[in-house]
Length: 229
Image 1 (tube, rainbow, N blue to C red):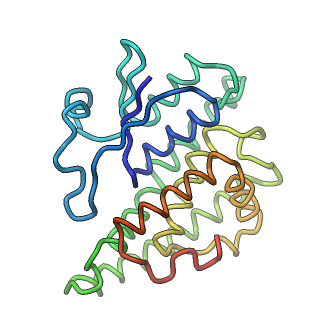
Image 2 (cartoon, helix red, strand yellow):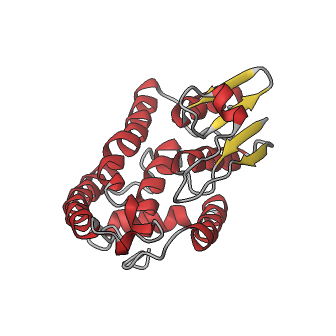
């Protein structure tokens, strides 16, 4: 098995975490990336396997896949030991909705913060306008945290046992923290869940690698991890 990933790709890291949690042996290929040029030059194997030219791309024998959600569902079917989805159809659907919420709902305001760690961003004429949009996005994110606080309730994880839902939601929350998004302290149950997931060995390694890549590739972000998260 081979996984094409990137040093700062949120979606590729979802797959990396799932592989680590399942204990599936694989080769990771880190595609070259910079904050200024992105994934350029494009990796030819990624271009050949994914019409969007993006990571993650998974190759497992003759199976060639792209899109993190498709890959996660394939891994669950192909490597069912140490499951990352609940057993019942109803609970599996709920888990998938959390994954979708992270990828398609939480990503929208998160994208408004992604300029913050680009080298030279603070010196651009567009910085004040971008910061104004980011503050609006942070208010949206705070409301999303409140929604997740209610959805989590008193559970240790979003689907009772650790699942893909926790991987996807954690990645969105973690990337928000590193980009100076709102702190989690106003949602104490969500904050406790975040610390619980963060302590898992696979997540600790992912965070260490991501922050190391940031030191090499990204500009410092004022207010990053302002809640200590």
